[in-house]
Image 1 (cartoon, rainbow, N blue to C red):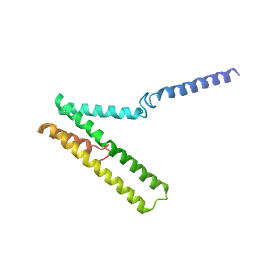
Image 2: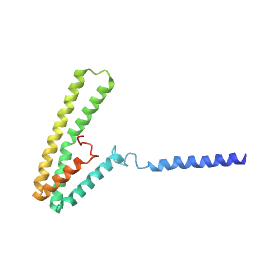
Image 3: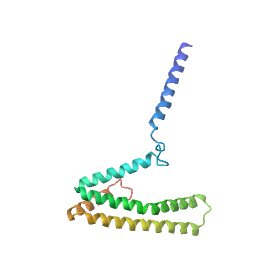
Image 4: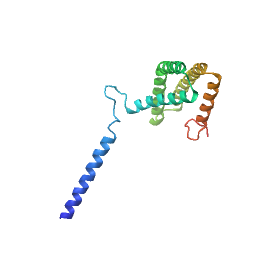
Length: 164
């Protein structure tokens, strides 16, 4: 009886530790306080963008003026493209729902796919314009280095957009 009681006490302690430990491990993964719907992943994404910009600026050797002008270009692009990206997300969800429903006919799926493709083309045009603005800030040496870094990143085996 004493042995069973010890085993029960040990099991209770292990279970309590696992439950409390898992709750504290995920404590930061809820919505931000006062941030509305902006949760942890949203904050990390913006932190990642800042970190990526900082690393790029270091590698290219950007001056303070170039950094501030580049930030202005990227922030203006983000603000300008926000409605476009929201529309693209919505249309992709609609396409996914149509395909998953099993009831969508080929014509409806093709029409929805055309909407998504048009929005993707608009996004590509905007990215191209933003890249042209950014390249205009750089010296010829910095521009060449930027293109080489970009090509190396896109040629990496683990890059999601890499053609196989």
